[in-house]
Image 1 (cartoon, rainbow, N blue to C red):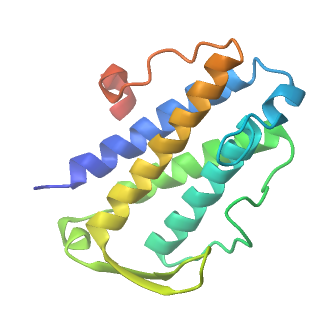
Image 2 (image 1 turned 135 degrees about the vertical axis):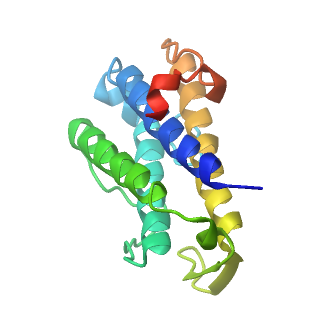
Length: 168
């Protein structure tokens, strides 16, 4: 199976969904975005920060330019506006990186040290890549639930709903 179209599609989907989610989150007051709503990373803000942190950690692993994080719940940006700008910057980097992938990359392995329990890990590259995109979708799903519970409809989030123009 050729995973290049998958990687590029998922990178575009990641950017498209993050743009839409941040737009929806902007409708909430900061106090609501920061309220502990019982999610893995407590609040909408905490989950947005975790997504950005995890994406930077994984992108660093993939590119060989590590992103150092103290913990998976580390707050990178306290302000929503700055968090949103940095999300856009990271999404552009993910898309640019995915455009450089070759079939050869998917045959390799990825070695890294975990943050949660510093142990060395070796995975097939393709499996790490699938996890990367699955992790994004997982936590965005939590955010859409929290938004809906807060009275904000995030709209359709299905990959097949992404306009074809977004893949350009």
